[in-house]
Image 1 (cartoon, rainbow, N blue to C red):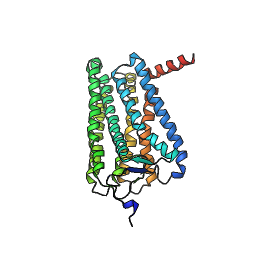
Image 2: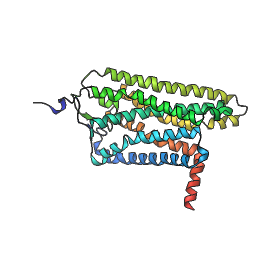
Image 3: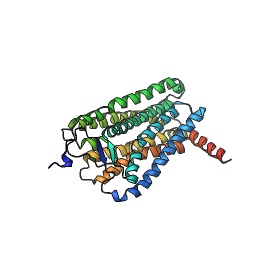
Image 4: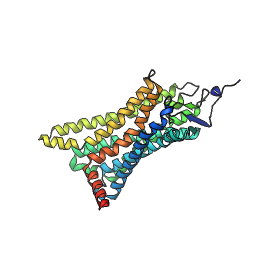
Length: 315
């Protein structure tokens, strides 16, 4: 007698997403903060895009990079959260094989884009602080567009092997994914083949691409801090460093959950599965929620335009 869990899913028509395994009874309650966070992410990032588009005084390199970050946050959260909520609310667990691979691609490619944009923003801060007189001639609209294109193409190319490898492997164990989305590790762990090449490539992506991004950010801030400490007064040093606080906060909001989630999935073998899935969900939602809040609160130009918009509507 054949077992449905050992049927040859060489090219399964659908996968089944469990949501958060072990916490199915609490899915409705868990959906409340997730829905609230997703709503905040949508409103916050669309507000950033609206304000920058409307105000011509904000049409500069720093705000163009901020818009790129907002778009990336919107796509990254939208690629996973609506399906997650449909699982929690409607028990809609099925996802087609092609849709699963597409979701995998979007998750990893836009995660890489977000990291690359933070590197571009670090370069923006470096030029603004270390070479303020050359800022407008160095970061022209053409240069900003080329940097954005390089970030997108780099991430698109680096992420291609993930769905390509996943499609090649046979799935003979089960088509049930113990997760709320089709992350690379969650999917390939179902394959009944040697997936070491996939694991090695994932580790290569984490250490080389993300590692290089962190390296370039670290170099930028080393040079920035050196320039800041050369300023004559304490007030000037604090004021100059204050222009970097938003970017530093955005970096921490992205890299800390990402690094923690990646390491826990690879090495946290004794950690309960529902905890690993919750950590992954934090990574999917925290950066898109925090980034517009950070820049809305810390960036004087955006805060001022937002207050003007709100007070104008009230009157």
